[in-house]
Image (tube, rainbow, N blue to C red; front, side, top):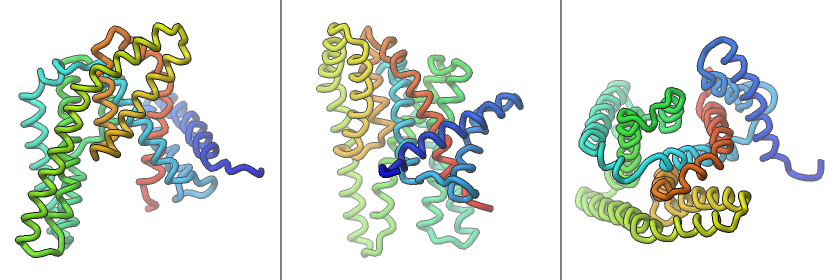
Length: 296
């Protein structure tokens, strides 16, 4: 075939094998997520047969995270988020601190470097956003009090990880102590400034522009154009947040959804994106297993 079919092959293999393994998991009365993870292993580089492109797989997984977090944001409001701050903020920070410390202790006991132990501890301290949200959705708990606390907890973890990933090179660099201290303060200031700038942009500018755009498209009467506008807003805000403000795709998508969630068109936007959210959420699990689970 004269054309490059890497992307098509990755999507077809991911969805096709995920369907077979998901159906098998459903037949065995276990979570379909287990089937999707098995599908990722089967199309990954550590098993014989077809091998999906891992680079494309990870990008498809990011789209899944963006659409899922956007959908969650549509059911949230700033009031909902602030209502759980007294639990989510101290709880998430304490959990990250304890888990990171335990992970670092284990890494040092195994003879790892302090840098490697710190990264290992941070990896253990953060929950999987997609796995947790899928579990909440399966139990219709996203809009409950416990669900709001869980989502708020995830947002705090995301913000902390943005800060941690920027500070790690400054903390464990090869420069002198004084240079490290100056670099640490500078990095912290830059990260905080970007996060504040992102939040300010979303609630001062985007809060006025995005609903106006969506209402204008809705009045055009075109369902296709409305669906396209919703997807463009979700993906565009997430990408812009990552490129301009260095925050995660998930955080940008969540804030985009939360802004649109305050409009009367939020339910329609959620319904229009539901099929794509489900499909790309499946690709997330397949991609994660494909790229992350090594051969024994």
